[in-house]
Image (cartoon, rainbow, N blue to C red):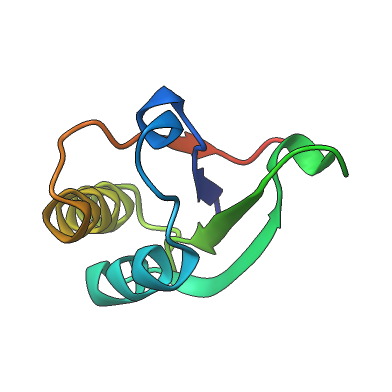
Length: 88
């Protein structure tokens, strides 16, 4: 099962990284095991929302990924959201 996070990208330089709002959107999109951790696992980095897709099936994983992305874009009112695979 792959783990992803909502990247603290440059869009959030001028917009609030609202953890509660992001968690709710990820949950609505089908994310599982939603929690926060410091970006890249470094203590000097901001907290980001991490989650599992909740499935190991490739097609269903892609569908869940797309649902989560759409929910985030709608909730935050922007297409500039980056989901990255958590590799730390």
